Length: 196
Ligand code: GLV
Ligand code: MN
Image (cartoon, rainbow, N blue to C red; front, side):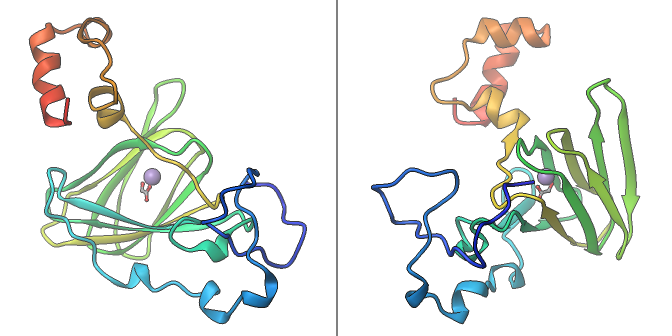
């Protein structure tokens, strides 16, 4: 969880550039309005026309500055049939997922390399311990939609495939070939899918 707040509210001033703090500085309280505590971004279905056929819409401190210092955030996850929210981890938060529509296979892998998973139906939940790699895969024949919640205002996300094969600058091919025990041609082929 993020550090406790020392005041009722501290709506992030995302544009403040002169001070560097853990989080964001607060907007002057006299400028704070009800709109700072309201966010409609999760009411809209995300666009799943992409290589993974999934979309994550984030309600974190960057999109919803009223969350600053409050230690919580949420995402909306839309996954088309056969689509995947690819394996990723959140360095700063535990994730709770509740499925609202469709059917999703959800799972994570522990540090002792054990895979834990369930198929969720609407109303059912799963929890992913902080920092562990996890995914959601639509195993139904309809669109799936879930809400995820985090004990951080900015959980961060490390997507396994794009981190390793789409970084800037690129990780040397021989490092990845050695790590995955494949030919460098395989590495080049995977990299080409992720912009490298
Ligand atoms: C799902 O895993 C999410 O990070 O929202
Ligand atoms: Mn996640």
